[in-house]
Image 1 (cartoon, helix red, strand yellow):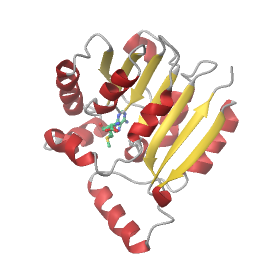
Image 2 (image 1 turned 120 degrees about the horizontal axis):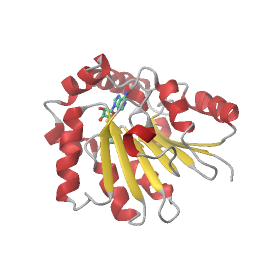
Image 3 (image 1 turned 135 degrees about the vertical axis):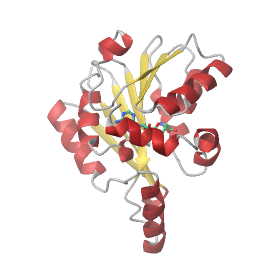
Length: 215
Ligand SMILES: C[S@@+](CC[C@H](N)C(=O)[O-])C[C@H]1O[C@@H](n2cnc3c(N)ncnc32)[C@H](O)[C@@H]1O
């Protein structure tokens, strides 16, 4: 097991049962991201860092014609996701697998080289090599494809004391808000010939972004 996989299992081992209830209050923007996916009929939609499967199940309900895929580095989270997907009647719609966002092989993992929609929801802030993970995903976008991201923002519009407390608390869970998300996304988009949209939410608490490959 890699160090990153071990660390994620250590963090989530005791809290998978509480995860979905507690995160509903502070992983803001996830449903807005799912709404914005708008995949074409029959599209392949991939969540990288799918955790408990919560977003994949919501995506299945919202976009029933899509084929859904998820990877996660934590086997503990994948076990929980498998149970939730089964309970939600999603086993024929959603495939999940173990993988590291920075280097997984999509063909080996799911038998597909590209995905019309790919999303990261509060995952990049947990990956030290997050730029590598983004770039890896960007290479799996076909023409007309979109890569969407929801994550913690720079919290610039919020009081300093709130920002400090939030960051200390997030660090306990191995989460580091990336203050340079927007410039990095724009530079990556330019380098890869993608269009970039970036929307700051709740005074910078979180953001939504989309990188789109022109048709
Ligand atoms: C904060 S959780 C978010 C889960 C889900 N996306 C959501 O919105 O509820 C972050 C997830 O990213 C996974 N993760 C962390 N590093 C990863 C990596 N290098 N590759 C794949 N998944 C990773 C963790 O195991 C965890 O399930």
